[in-house]
Image 1: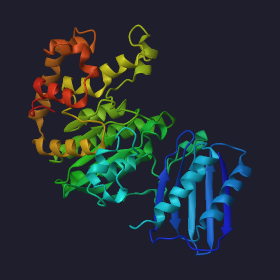
Image 2 (image 1 turned 90 degrees about the vertical axis):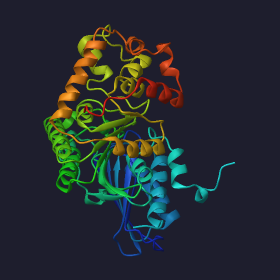
Image 3 (image 1 turned 30 degrees about the horizontal axis):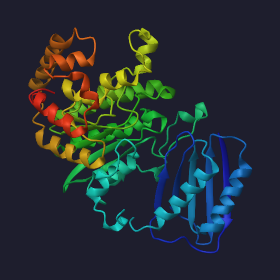
Length: 105
Length: 312
């Protein structure tokens, strides 16, 4: 297992009022993303535990692209990864942001 | 034409969602009354397995089981749903403890039924001792809850089926609903082949696996009470039906169940294949049963009858 941590300053707060949301399952080629609204509006953090060791550069690129596109201010993402491909990671992150922006608790 | 999402009722969405394909969380969301689910020990509490780290394996925040309470047609229910894609839905220490705790809470309250959405290969071998103990604790907790008057209903239609200790727990439930892909057994196909040889059971023969362990056979044998089509709404309706059917539980029902099983062994013990059993049950052209669509199969199964409600 490899642990990775990313912190970004972002331009805007993520939408919605939900406190947390979860998407995905830890399985081969899949991952779960737990997102919680616990940070100041201009910050975003991602903690990743991945079964695939040595892909830090790819994660850096995928996360950088995601933060730029969605500006997920105030959100902390905790990820358990079962070796998902970059496109699956991007999809789950987008789903997590969308879910926490929905109505509900 | 696809209708816009907002025009679809929850029931229509549940009817259009395959139970087999859905995640544990989606199954619960669509099975229960819309918006009624409240989770216990949710993923944000990060109550993960203490064992997987030792094996350098990834954890899941809910340890592969979602437990909580909600409403079914307005009435309160406790629910547990296993996630069959995380480690085959297998029982580990935390996973098992969450279900044990739910059942003990149900026993204490006494009047709120429990729905268990099984999706499991059995014990998680990386935490074998803790997993085996969890199975024993859950079986005891099911029987104690039932003795206190709690109805415990098993719903089985997931990709991992209901195997190993999961099959034992299912056998302790008040009643079961199963769909065709929802297999129920203790030893799985590969386990039987490994231990007894390919002549005994060829695990690559999918038709053999399905007609021996699949939902249709389990319904015809009386192990499952209701056969559901593979969508969440059918399972919701099956759960409601079973909650209305289940009677009181006591020593008499255990004795009646023992008698039912002994009778089943007397009638079918010499049969070599599930098709022989169906033929012995009086089904004409029994070999066509696996191909029957759900509605035709349900009509056939209703003609064969159900397990007496005195048993189980």
